Amino acid sequence: ETLLAEKTSREKKRIKDLSTIYEKMAPGRAALAMNNMDPALAADLLAGMKPKAAAKILDMLDKQKTSNLSTAFTRIKIE
Image (cartoon, rainbow, N blue to C red; front, side, top):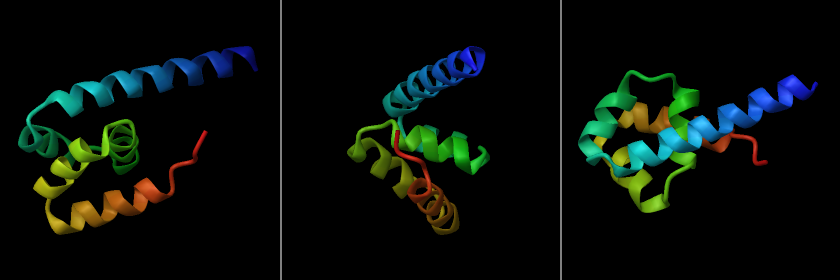
């Protein structure tokens, strides 16, 4: 149980760090990278960003991908 908690904690930190990296990227480049990314991971990354940065990235994605990520975003468990 302790190992699982430690793994989860490390995963959360890595996702937060990666979210910060994507947030600082040019929106077009971040959108291009997220376009082929697992939707759950992309939604986690967007959730870790400031809303303005996430909006700029979502604006650069195609409509279907934006819709899918928005749906995934609403299903993220709040901790």
